[in-house]
Image (cartoon, rainbow, N blue to C red; front, side, top):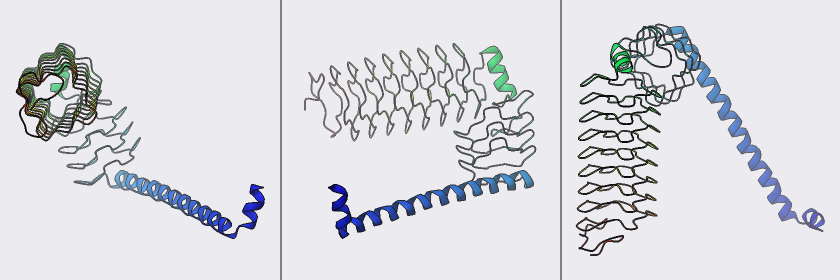
Length: 323
């Protein structure tokens, strides 16, 4: 009966034809975009491999996996998120290039000039082994060391001593820095997703604009640490000491702060959506302008805190702000 109704209803037939036409158009557009993107990627790769020079080029997200870029001049090139897996970058010049989130698995970097101006040593496969990086790996002791933009992803650096070290823009993704001493270290702009910082020592460390998504800071000491505009989504901060830490405008969504001490912390304009603050200490913390949609604040101590609306929480504010 349904089929007969469809055949005898001109309006229904017209709607079906229009729907089929739209689907066909969308499919054609998708195929065209894939073809254009594929051609563009091949064109970029071909030009790079031919000229071996592309200073200050915009190459974000470029597919350069396996490309032969030996000796290429890529000074200042923007290679954010680029795929350089197994690429040959022997003796290439990457000074001041932006390689944040770039894939370098299996990339040959021997003799290359790294983004910090240092030369990558022998056997630099998948990471740039500068003299400083090699020293750190071999000794686990490098106070005040210069490790700017260092490629330390996936390394076991448990207990490393890096007091005052410059790790700005370093790649620490999935690295183990448990029990590490990073007091007053500079980690601005560092990429440290899924890293292990359990029980690490980070007082007065600067993690401004770093990406620490999904990292584990359980029991870590971060008193007066700077994390302005940092991305801390889904992180584990249970029992961490964050007294007087500056987390202004940081993204703390889905993070676990159970029993963490955030007394006097600056959380102005921070994103705390769906964060778990069960039993957290927030006395005197400033949460003005923060978002807390779906956040859990059960048994959180809020006496003296500045609430999201700018009002001060009175004595007895436990699990809710009494104004």
